[in-house]
Image (cartoon, rainbow, N blue to C red):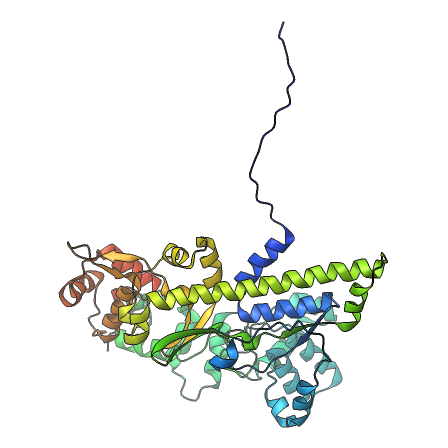
Length: 453
């Protein structure tokens, strides 16, 4: 018979609890400046204690360190309102970009069409995506509008006649053909290739296409070059809202003999505390109103602390990156040093994951252009018997320069690039590594870079 005893044991464990506040701090560190702006705007809608005051963007180093937080509860200034009134109405209008749907709707309104057709055209226009392609099929549209397939197709064709060329296409092939139809200098062979050989053309199976069309490789090359002038994304160069606009989170400038780092704080709104709710906090009461105000006050203080922590971390991490990559800023890309997240984490005295979050989707404006902070990290390649190392990013830049300068009729193979790096830069890199770097740079193989004219 088993003898079972029950004992009380005291055990000490260390456990990290992921609180809502900690999650918020981590999230804010990952946000870009633009995303942080949006987050603050959202929080201001949920928290009545928050009053935000937008700032005019500036890149002045002396202004950039100004805190986005104001703790006093003075009367909200009307300066922003006064400045808004002074602006020209035409300036305001010119700064408001339209979406592609708004552009299409405006073009439809300018056309003299019947009300019934206008309904169809508007419906189709509102189903054009941000990329310019139609996002609804004809059968679905016909069911929705109780219209015939012919009527829907006519409406689609109408939209496809609007600007920009290629708008409302359902496939890349249709998009290119729509653009081709408007070109007075259109190459007849280009139309044939788009209609019957688009996939083979993309795979550069030119000999196969040339044989099928009974033309020379030079003629295929000529038609290919013309097709390259068409735009597979019809709204790419059209004047509508673009999600690709980047706002720098950090600026690096050479000031009074040294490299200085300053944050783009001016893009963040100033945060004020609502005076009415502050009075509720000052009242010693157990009322629901007091509890609500206290809860929102705690939420606000955590937000402010998280923003401050994000800014300090981003500042410190960027300063360490600049200190490690001074030669890049002074001499150019060829002097980018090997650098890892761990290197910066040790110097900034933070965790490696913190550096990763602080540098992801963060952009720095420098005298040499706009870069993502991640661009300054690269692995090292040991290239000789003395153990000397070179950044993989530098090797990539040399590969790009070799490919740019090559004779396209006899493009450099990966093995030829290996030999040139050894001869010109005294760097030993394997052919497999060159192929990997070339793929990362989206550079095709030598066979696909070859030209026949």
